[in-house]
Image (cartoon, rainbow, N blue to C red):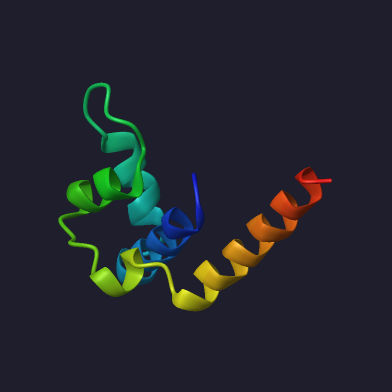
Length: 76
């Protein structure tokens, strides 16, 4: 997994079809395609809803705060 959105998407896929089906989809990825959640959804015949893809504003605000704290240390 690459980020929080991928984590939410994988969790949603597992909720929809179960862990075993997602694991089997990993084995069915054709060619050089990566095991991205969007590719897994295609193999499973699912469309990921926007509510899963869009990062909640609370997570965005937390991440911005973390970055600002990090950047403020560099200015000194």
